[in-house]
Length: 341
Image (tube, rainbow, N blue to C red; front, side, top):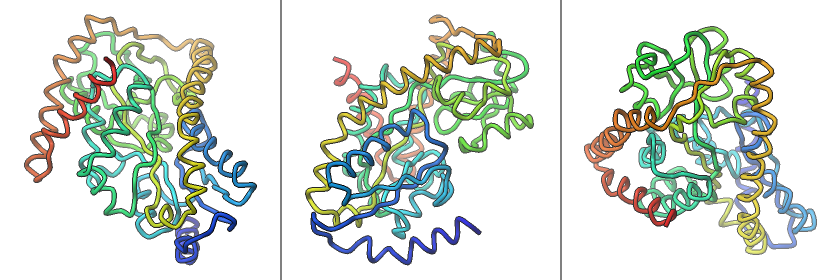
């Protein structure tokens, strides 16, 4: 009821938010975020801070955490009806809405670090078929919300070899879930805010999350016994997505403020992860969680079993839907190669 009323209230002001504004005008935006303030939200917090400071308090961005404005899976719906002006979007929470996004969630892509990640993702999001797909939701990709490589944390029997994954119920989304299925695991899709309760109640035995900050951000270490290190499964990519209507109505001066703040937002986010890891890993040690180290030879087996085969299947499935899946996959691989050379 609360979310419904907030959405209704936002709709009431949609026309006002879309009206053209001059640089001297006061502009207030609301951005819908899922989860609490944490390392991943540093980039958005920086943009909001800079917008206020450089506009002399005339451009305010309110960050609405913990799904105050709508469920994580419904962020694009909110942008489409102009309920808010920006959103922290995890595309895999509602994959049918933007199927071209799926290629960035493939397991074991050759994207070794966060700098490469944002170069690849920003370039891919600018590709016309991808941008056009988002435009159907009155949305466009403003910047990549960087995420470290995923690892698992869980309860019960630790997966010390590949056979131990067989029959294990795991939280793994998108292509990462497809990869785990090939290892014999049973993947399930649960949004991040719901994972703690689901893991605690035994709905699954392990959850994949960006390592390491997110495990402590969602307190999974409090109900877990072990975690993997070196698996580097891939990521479930996210974007900061803005309303096209709101962006067009924004004064050029304010657009420039946000555009020029992006580089520092990326830098701060990477630094926030490094700082968060310094705090997270000691908490794992304090609770005496067992570290399941995935050695290079085991990771090579993971890739050969559940890497390229998942990529090719995604591309083939996309082609059957009339989408340029093969071209999308080759583009991502080409961008990754270019970014790392």
